[in-house]
Image (cartoon, rainbow, N blue to C red; front, side, top):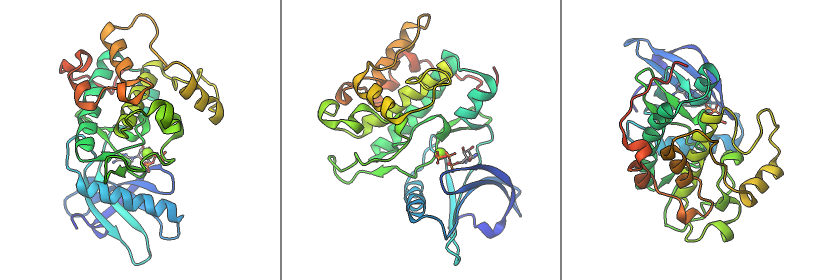
Length: 280
Ligand code: ATP
Ligand code: MG
């Protein structure tokens, strides 16, 4: 369907994910540039399963806030490839490393777009489950899009076993570890909002909020901090709107956390700023 791998020429590697490789490619006839994610046929069955899940979700989604998929190829060799929209400024993680921590204005711009993407996904009963700076891609029009659906979940019923152990542990919400304490009226969508709150805080601080700068992540310490500690908060000197927005995302009790559509009307993001993310 759509753009086929045979029409594409590899330019160079953009990055290696967990099991797969992403290339920058160009279309031989149209010269259009794409990103191509390839997982080899002899790779781990889990990795292949994740790519099939990602394919299924990309097939179902069509939103300016979600990375667009233009074609899917399965080779006789067993290699699987996804042709995606090329996001030329890379990830929020790399932009933060390159240009330094994000201002409130930049973060409001990021938050609004990611919330639009999450609003779309949640309305379509999809939980992303791995929202973090390296899974949010940016292009030169300053559009921010959600990528990497390898561990996402399509909800069949409202109370599904969506609590399984997937995603990047550090960004997992308290109810993912301890649903009895923090998951009153369990709603899996709220986990994505927690991860968004941590992501914005990390881009503001320049380090992962539950760790000191340079501290090595240690799984047990992190889990204790997430479940037993206070939620991380902003230092002095930020606007009241930003502080309140982060608090709405980082409620430990999942039912108290705001939804994507509620957050879209929060004063922090309600102003339609369009901030240049590719400068200090
Ligand atoms: P993880 O397994 O932790 O999710 P990852 O996010 O790095 O790792 P991938 O989603 O496979 O794994 O992506 C690898 C890298 O390729 C990304 O970090 C990003 O730099 C780049 N990349 C992925 N998709 C695109 C795209 N559509 N446009 C531009 N660059 C991309
Ligand atoms: Mg990723």
